[in-house]
Image (tube, rainbow, N blue to C red; front, side, top):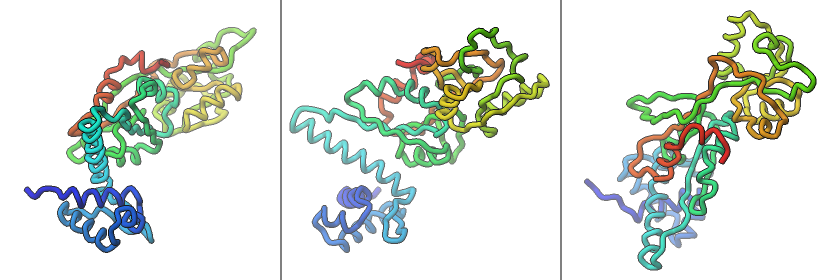
Length: 299
């Protein structure tokens, strides 16, 4: 099998990092034509186009994204080897790239990542987006892990490793009911303005089904896709919000909000999605082994 030309790979890596052939050539002290030729030779060796031109810009293809992730690992390892053998020390910081679905609770994300936030040897890169966007990044190794509240299923073409890391009941929360009797579920549902997740949410679908079964017509004050905004509205609007309590853990602790009721048979699950890698970082194994109760609370 033909061996990879690491000289060509280094030139590709430089262009990918610069995003511009002219600047990369100047930094490498070679001509643009020589640089372009060596990248073409690497593409021929790999059997894949690594860049595509969009106007004046060079944009990585999917194969280019994958090649860049391996190049980053290769050259970082080389730098670590130099530091270790020449200076007797290891590089102190490792980059961890985590993607999270944009609508996922920020509190949950912080709780899950809390062991890494206190480590001096870790640099976190946090990405937010839709699940398809993040899975595309995971596929080409530009993120190491995706956090989602939606399960994905693996196939021969999509070899996802999806594990549930926590599950929490869904509650109705609102401002303290000073001088009023305790909230009665479901009898009092029709008498309060509700703040609900958007209609594409599994939580909303389950809640609407329950209300249909109980014959309840509720008053909708707002439907909100983003959990961070739902948290703010729950805190500031006086409405009653339907959500996992992890979303408003700080407000519940301070007494700004209280839990009115746990909705029966309604839960939200949190998933960690990865792909098989040649070298799985030890921090990843440690994160995924944490007990569910620890993941759902701060610290």
